[in-house]
Length: 194
Image (cartoon, rainbow, N blue to C red; front, side, top):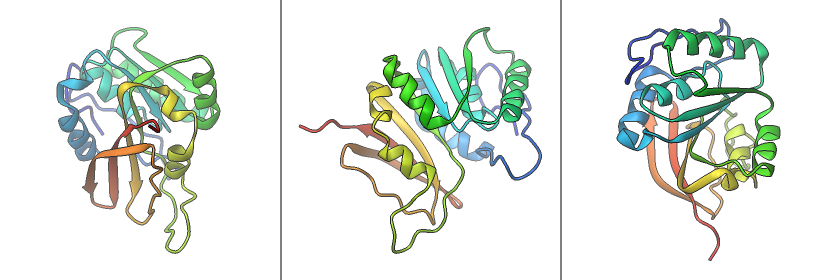
């Protein structure tokens, strides 16, 4: 894996061995950031289910002001720290939060934190034909704290597998759906009830 664009372009980042982490592939990250273009510059990013921290690091490389990366595993968090060092990004631009994502969302909402982009490519859920999804992606969409964390005009970029059919709550508006192999990425905005 490598950083695709920006000041750290070409730097190799590492992932833990095994099946615990499914990093967002280079070509998918490239498609996401091509879509975002210059809109990522000088923004505050929140990455959920960090894994390798690739989405945070790519954001910072391309000019984001800051990124907060939430990852539950201390072992994976050490990889994220090492990857940040390899990328040579500005000191203090990456904040690493070792915590359960849903606990962190509650804490951030209570402290009135807001982000311009929230990015999440969580572990894939099971196929859910004939029943509502129970995946992390669906739980994020259903989480009452998540919309509070988006700044005005902010965007949620959410990944999930094709076999995981999500139920999009009415307060989320989909700007774009990107398909890459077995992965789907939704670009969503929060629309408060009128």
